[in-house]
Image 1 (cartoon, rainbow, N blue to C red):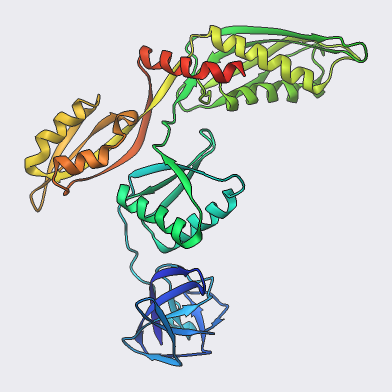
Image 2: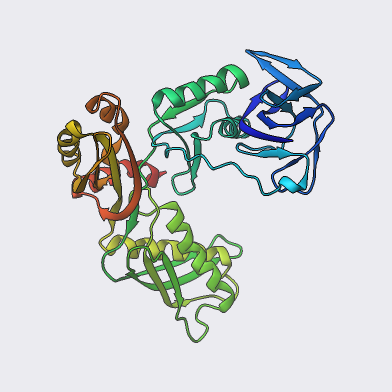
Length: 391
């Protein structure tokens, strides 16, 4: 007996359904089946035939039937079911879905619904292999991706109607990053006396830029115990907090080396939290003096369009600060146009491409590198971030 799972459905009342096509043999209720090359079988407790919205329970199915099995949590899309280990080697040819390009950032409308929405989104992802969920820790946002606005709207409407959860949706934020361009130094003395135990810690450090993509490097060059060894992790922690919490515009800082070389402590008033605070302020001072710049993602884009639309595609991308690198003719009267473009220019690109190509074009992107944003954009981002800094 051989069965394939063409898709998985989540029913709010029955649970997870593996909808399958029987290629050969016969399947009966209470059969023991294996999933792929798994060594542990599962029992077919409920065997169903689907007729519209109705699920009709049956005792058996034969070759050619399309049925469903309920509550088999191990079943995944493209699984192969069989009743003998002699068939472990049989697998379906993988289906390659186009990469979903249209994204929306979502957030809960009601506090406390975060876990419920997370669970329901993953149920939708189980059902729809072209639907993707991404979470950006640096931007603190969850982005759902699909083939277009209609695709995602259907999914969000289903969440509302089937699971009674609602979200606010907006365009995703651009994943800008910050870095520095020159070497500089920073210093801060943290001193506080409140009548009881005081607080004291002082830090001197240098910072310098690293090559793109190298991340962060912390160097301890403190000698003579001016900052005791037990406080060095606190010094590094202060820098890491700035890297994560952002320095000048509200985006993560990267590609930087921090060298702590001097400081002072007090035998009674120095504590870990004091050196965290002192180092954060010393590091921030150094970053602001190091001619910081905001970097934006540049992506490689590949646009598949009819030959007659190629000129319009190239003109449109050039207007988005894009640089065309190649245009290759394909079979069927289509052209693949490739190049580099700023990610921030691709907001709402899918409906624009649909309009240019009368619904026949498609595109894909992948990260290439980061480049500095224009000075005007950087100033706008700094201005937007001021209220956050002042809180």
